[in-house]
Structures are given as structure tokens and as C-alpha cells.
Length: 112
Image (cartoon, rainbow, N blue to C red; front, side, top):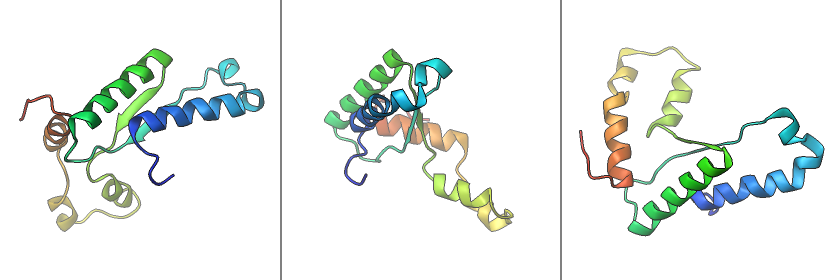
């Protein structure tokens, strides 16, 4: 999947999977929910921001969820499988930091 993880491509992957597997899994019958979970690159170009917003609009139209992971998502996973030390907490990202990073990444102009 390397190189095919842009928001638009992720939406296309869901569409392809549903088309190929609907007969087998009967998605509509069981009201399955589809979600995309991704991170956001720190330095997004205007084109990338536009692509991201289009993908969000498409997800909303089709009933898909779209979640943006915390900048330290891998650390979060690790910490949920091990005891947290005081040193670990020094590197934790607060909700305020995460919101500010996302706003800066998608370019809405607001900073906290």
C-alpha cells in the first residue's frame, strides 16, 4: 500500500473493496461502517489540503468515517501495552497540542 495512502486513494480503496467483496460480506444487509484512519503530513501543499477536503466531503456523502490519528499514534499504541513511566509522560501530546497541529496542517489559519 506504500504510495497509495493519499486521502482520495484511501476512499477509492474502500470503494474497490466494497465492489469486490459485497456479495461475500453483504455490507448493506449488516449496516457495516467504513472508516479511514490516517495521519496528516506537517507541510501540506495547497493541492494536498484541497484533496483532503474533497476526500472528507466524499466520506460524508457516502457515510464513511474519517479519523486523523494523533501525531504520536504509535507511541499511544505502545503505551497501551506497557506501563507508563514519568519519563513517558514527558513526551505525551496533550489535546491542545493535537488540535493546534491539525489546524496548522490543514491550513485553517487558527492557532492555539
